Image (cartoon, rainbow, N blue to C red; front, side):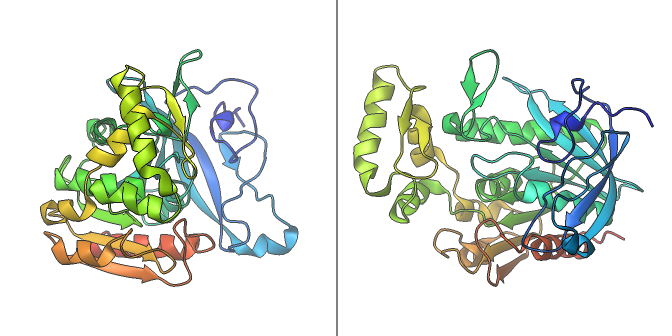
Length: 346
C-alpha cells in the first residue's frame, strides 16, 4: 500500500509519520469507535497507510466494544482574514446525503469533544462533516515563529467570522445548507450563526450551549470558574491594561480558563452573544441538549426552546456532565437520530 503522509496531523489518532502532511490530499480511514465509557475514543498507533486502521490502545478484554466506521478524512486549511484555520473534513464511504458543520467548545479544538466523537456517527448515515479550529482554539497556541494566539486571545467577532469562513469553505465545494452543531461556547456561537441565517442552515444542534450574553461571565464566576469572587478586581485590571495599550497582554485567572488577555476578558464580559436572545431569530428546527449535572441557568435549554422561532426539541441527558463523559456514544446516537429524522435523510 502507498504511504499515507497524514498521520502526524491527527494527534492521538494515528501513528507518527516520517514526512510532513500534504494539506488537501484525502486519506481513507477505518475509524474505530468505542462503545464503553472507560476508554472513549482512544485510538492508538498503527502504521500509516492509505487505508489507516486506527486500532485501540485498550486491553484486549474490551475488544468487543469496538466497531468500525469507514470514512475518508481530509486535512484542510480554511482561509480567513488572519491565520488559516486547520480542520478535518470527514466524508462517508458512500453517497453524501447531507453535511454538518461542527463548532468546538471554549479553548478546545477540532479533535476533542463532540468534534471528535460525532463524525463517525454522522458518517454512518451518509452525513459528511467539517470539524475545524477557530482562532480561539486551545488556550495558548503557537502561530508563526514565536507569535501566539488561541482561546486566551479570542474575540466574539473573530469567532463569528471564523464560523462564516468555514461555512463558505463548505459552500464553495457544493455543500450548502449545512446542519450546524455546536458544543458549549461553540453552541452559543452556533445559535448566533443560525440567527444570522448565514449559509441558510438546515438544522441546529446545541450541545450544552451556555447562556452567553452579559450573564455568562458572572454566572461562570459564581460557579467557581473564570474570575471566581474577584470579578470586580479583575475587570478593573483588564480595563487598566487596555487603557495603557496592553490589551494583548495576558492576565491570570483563578480558575478555568486560567489565563486570558485583557482585551479578551472585557470582550467576553461585554460582547458575548446571548443564546436565548438569539432564539427568536433561529428559523431552522433545533435540538438542545443538556446533561442533568449541568445548571439550567447556565445552559438554558428550556428558555431557548420556549423562545425559539422554529420548533425546538429540548432534551436532558441523565447521568451526564458538560463533556458527556462516558455518554459519548449515547449522545452521538441521539444527535444523529434527531438529525436524520428532522432533515429526512434517507
